[in-house]
Length: 612
Image (cartoon, rainbow, N blue to C red; front, top):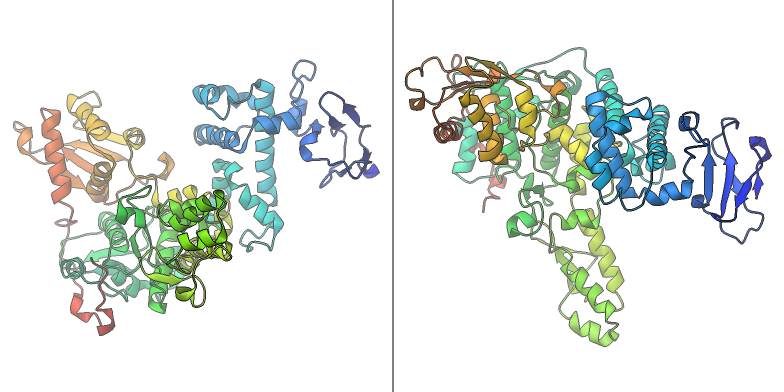
């Protein structure tokens, strides 16, 4: 082997057993890379054949006599992509509680059950040295990314920056604690120094008539979303939306309602707006094909409506992006049920065929049929006969026919053009929502620094905007953030309350309860993101007959007056009835004035309704 002389490395040694080239880099000067070249050009040399001794700070902490550094090839073979994901997940869990580690002692504090039982980690036998070396490599990689981030344009399109693309491809290996540090710095540096904080008059009654009359607000004027859009679209974006954490972008005045907005009406309005976004009352989103057909994954999800691409539609999609940016900054999360086909393009990630199948299990039916027939190696005549009646025309996610190419409705699928058909079909489905998602991304970019979102996985950006819902596990976080007054944690009533939340309620009911007591249906992602603690207080008027009273919620104060119900069954019935029938924010202030909106203001070109 020949090594570049400028590196001044120690002489290489070759191992006949492992066929490795070994170099000691401890005394080497700092260089961007080390070039390794075989003396016989025709013999291939791959990175897996190189063992790097003394890589990173781990070299100074290991006793090489007792615990030699693992060869790079063995390390790479043991730690597959999936195994690395598990290690990063464990380190993320540790860092959330303890911060980023500065030595290897943290390994003993990781979830040992996962370390010793996960299939990806037990596939190969390895000792503590392997684990320490891999974690050292992951931590070194993360520090390197943090160092070079200010020098890299992470918004560069694919093909324009190999460094940016390589970082984006490695986003799942970047620790959340590292991302959050950079993300928080970026958000803090771009907070607006002046605030608009306008009062927005919202007419709930007029907005409800859209649902009653089964009409679609195509131009965003009657729905709550539309009313907010019209009243804010021309205001200064920085002053209105670039707000600090736990602040409100505007004050809500519900027309004709007794409301004083100390936070409850604001959160309630955002929750209702999200319900409109996912409904036929707005032209923006529709049920995913799996949702309609009750097949496969994401049966609860919505996807952008491909036909909504006129200028007024794109303006509303852009406004949605601003709302998402505001949610990230303020930590007032939005309960939106989007899938990876929306989130991935937002963070400059590639939508894959698997993402499409996750929303439409039947979309590649013809694609799969072609592949299946190809395996049988039929004659071209037999293939053409089996594909008779299939043209270069498919149904999109909205059920409308789309030509894959010019005159596709008359172009017959055949053996000769089958590869062209599959390529066009895949390209169409992967890019079906591009126009709508680009508008959302444009609005988001106006409010948050998008270069940092390129470090996120699609699930991480989803959690930043929407939170994690309200699962059984989230009850642990809620319980840690709860204060009691008029009750104690050991009271039978309080024990029944947490049993109800964990074991009786499902995820939807838990979210409904949070909306009942806080005006929002999702918890913050961590304890540090809570703007206030949850309070369970005594019900002053229920003494002597607690089972005869309903609970009283105070959304502005994130609290509930809870009677001391005698049984779990009574508690479940009373709270369920209250949260299902008392959703309006009212009776806590003077009557708010403002103009009513009526659905007769819809223009003639808005007659088309998306209600089924």
